[in-house]
Image 1 (tube, rainbow, N blue to C red):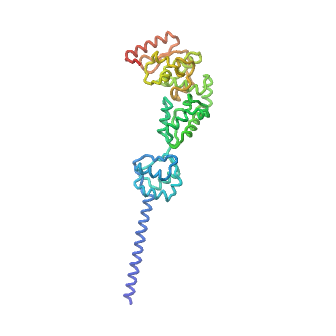
Image 2 (tube, rainbow, N blue to C red):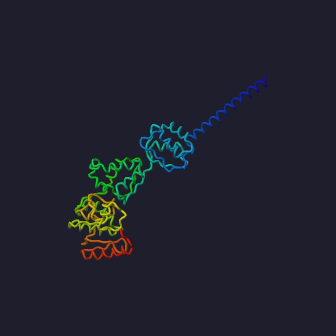
Length: 351
């Protein structure tokens, strides 16, 4: 009888042990799969950012991740995303990736829309096309969409600009904004920055020089094109203001180059001066209708804080230092011009 009980106990113990072992193994498998699904390092170092375009759905995100080889195991990411209800919360943006991120951490970041802003810095861009191309390379909006707004009289008139002078609204500086910023949102942001830049102090100084903020920027663009050194900008600004207020044509060579649409010109010749263009200040009186380039803040402030003097002529110095010889009389200017022309001849610069 005792042996039978012992056998029964032994069988029962084995059954319980086996069941316990199965439970432990099953728990281990479930735990491992759970860890692998949510917490195991899965993000690779193949891409620095994950870009999710506006209007994307879960399938679009999966395709982007697959094509960029952003995760090691797309299957675990997909299952985790479904479990965490991500398909209903897809948000566009530019998301910073870190090698070894888990699915849970990545999905939480995407669900929350915690994207890293783009740092924009633009200056010295000559044409609207150049500007639109640069912005299109940095943000989701493409250059075509931006150019359409820049050339839309109805749209830009709401901001107080026209197609010729809209470029003056963009103050060259450093900005942060989200990658999925639309062309319209970009315009609104830039107009806000423009309003902040043109504070009461700057507006008061513009009034003192008898120019509107737009006119200040148009003149500043010419100053920027003429000046190689920032410390000379106030002198150049003062010269052009002297000519402007005395009713003398500005006769600025950079405007002639712009009018000819040939930015390889290094020596402005008589043939260049005859072009019929509202940007040729050898032909028109006063300021051109718009800027010939995006003026820098330094140039704008140089116009607002111009150097008072009597100069109405200037010519690049013959030492090619980038500075200018200034003159009050035509005779002085002709003498300076001869020096520079002779220097150009010695350097064999014909155009």
